[in-house]
Length: 445
Image 1 (cartoon, rainbow, N blue to C red):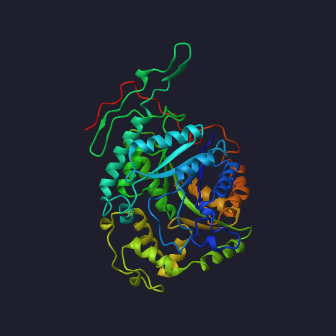
Image 2 (cartoon, rainbow, N blue to C red):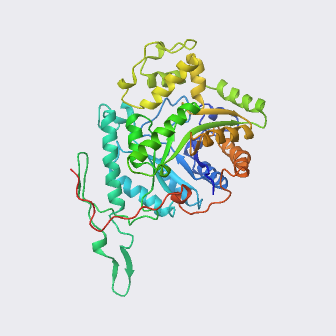
């Protein structure tokens, strides 16, 4: 079979456009309604998406006046979605900076059991001092330290997932032996950030390890992705930038002895779809006109580490901005926003409009055929293995994509017409990791 697209549905309350909640069709309380997410999950599964995905942060993001604020814990949310779906993958974000390995390893193993092998973990290090202040810290750890901790965190998680052999449970009623002691062993991990005895208190899950996803595009982020990630969510504005990122990450993966095809690179795209170009552009205008620029400027100022009054709406960004090396959080997104503004000579008001749909992800406005063309072009130009689909309005944007874009991709032989596997790893064409030997790797120093 020829190479085929991988599609992930990135779901966010009423949609990715920050003004989507103000449309007459939108339910402004959808962000905490399980029925809303269950219907979205069923729609994405009907479209044969590889997976659905929820972002997360251990902090109240932005200002509550701007858009629906507050989010359900995605690891809890996924368990409710697992029972109304049967094939689609279920990916949640969780921070390695503000969690401990044992709790998260157990949580994702549990989701993998509950879903019969459909769990994925989007590993993030969490930028920003606001989150740190929720966890007994006065400021965020340094960027490099967060990624060093993340690497050790993942190593501990792998050991915990493998602390049960696949054949540990024998359930021998005659002998009265439920599991073989020697096949469930401590990990005795001792490292710079963690000391974890183990073993995990959950048997090895259907996938062995949940699918590991990573979303950072800084140098440290790409290093972590090349070593551990099996799917990468990234924000790229131009074909050339996407191709550069794709080549770089595939080369880094190969240099570490991994098969480059074992890591799937999925840029985000916000498809604003209409039956005609005029209809699509009218929806885009309607959404952009509903943006509250004063709220958006506050968030932009925070991202750029400047005062809001230093960003007059009808002027371009100031000539003097912090260098990326001075940014301790969200380095890659900072660079993307500044590069976009400088390259296209955008005023602050214009930049706010461009970011309103996808916070730096590529927005594409057009007919279903044009959206399919754009996806195919990047895919065949080695800029992507697939896409992180980010509907600007939910549920209508996802429904339109499933009903009108997916059939075009299927007719072109670019996307599955039926699921051929049952696990998330099956969908991404990845093998189930073999378990480690009964005597796990020696403690690390």
